[in-house]
Length: 119
Ligand code: SF4
Image (cartoon, rainbow, N blue to C red):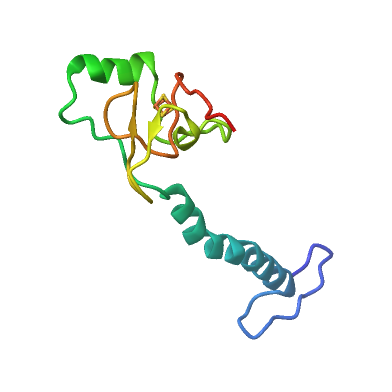
């Protein structure tokens, strides 16, 4: 029944036309999101994982975390370790090093001590 008291015709699946539109609209919205999910997850996982501080002294870890405030993934597109004067690369998709922050350094990371390479 509709709000004005008349009967809706039913589709083959027993749903009303309004419900079919709702279901179809929901699928139209959901399908592109589901299709984009793997690409989005791949983008999040891009690059090496460079957060293992095994072997560093407590002092080096403190400098890394509290002085430099190293971040594994930079949220500032103008401040990536790979673009920093202190960065020492180690090849494609590998953790590099840093002249001032000890331990593995993600080329996509950053810290407060960032110094842009001269262009
Ligand atoms: S100084 Fe900071 S931003 Fe520069 S390479 Fe080292 S960790 Fe990355």
